[in-house]
Amino acid sequence: MAWSVPNGALAQDGYEITPELIEAAKAEGAVVFYTATDVTVAEKLAKTFEEEYPGVKVQVERSGSERVFQRIGQEISSGIHAADVIETSDAVHFQLFKHEGWLASGLPANATKNWPKEEMDPDGQFAAYRAHLSVIAYRTDMVSAEEAPKSFADLLDPKWKGKLVKAHPGYSGTIMTATHALTKALGWEYFEKLGQQDVMQVQSSTEPPKKLAQGERAVQADGNEYNVFRLKEEGVPIEIVYAEEGTPLVVGNAAVLKEAPHPNAAKLFYAYLFSVEAQQLNSDFGGLRSFHPGVKEKEGRTPIKDIKLMLPDAAALETEMQTIKSKYEEYFGT
Image 1 (cartoon, rainbow, N blue to C red):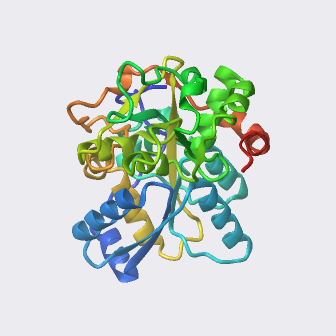
Image 2 (image 1 turned 90 degrees about the horizontal axis):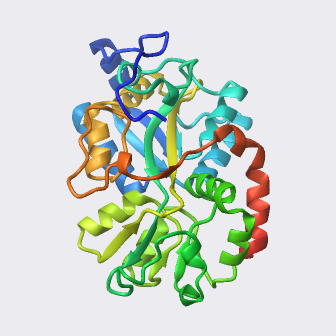
Image 3 (image 1 turned 60 degrees about the horizontal axis):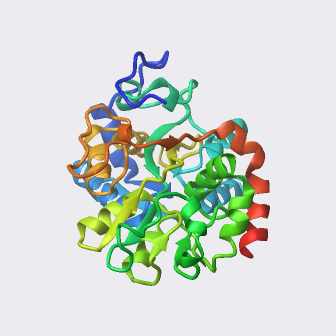
């Protein structure tokens, strides 16, 4: 995976934000955004867009990736076209949306000029709007740095029984992707043993860091990196562990739906998502990783280049999603 300025763009140049597009978007007056990004981050982004383009309101509909996926499928199958722009952290979803013919073609120039080619659909129907990691983390006032886990395998130590929290792959695209990566690295026997650790089970990848912040558990077995960043900066005694085996990387794609009810506002908002301003906000406020070469990481955060990564494999995941859900339910009873 490249994490640098692309060595070429898509065959298409991408569309620009023009005065005509802005006026057409204002005439529509609204854009509906279905997203799996943490609601605080998504709403902050929506507010900055509204300040940049007054007259266009953003309606944020936030849920876990798997719920967003299900909702879009149910609505479109029922002839309901409510969403304009969609985003989830499960790359398989966008392959399926594309196969169904639900996505509009045309990427903004903000993406085609700056993004690595491998992070854009070759037909211009979606692109990687964000990336983040699924990490281990712990409360520094409950666990010392010396005794903190250094690897995923360490979480199987009996001393962590009743002290772990983790999210669910049946709800969260982040955890679906991370679970797939970990089964390839450690096998299903790892999850079978982890399921015997009296783990607090939550839904979204946004929740484990919050459970740590509330002191309900000492260690998160998985959960998104960006919420840990934000909580740490707010003064919560919490620290990230980049596991010795590697840390799962999760990419969140975004697209405009072909039957978007506000097509011009959708194009304007979609272009804004890939702007350096929006991407820098995602990084600074949201703790997300960005593919935009103009984004500067906050001081004190470990650069992505210094982290051993487990890279996602959307093609392999597509064939194994149901197995992951059924095996997980078997081992965790949920």
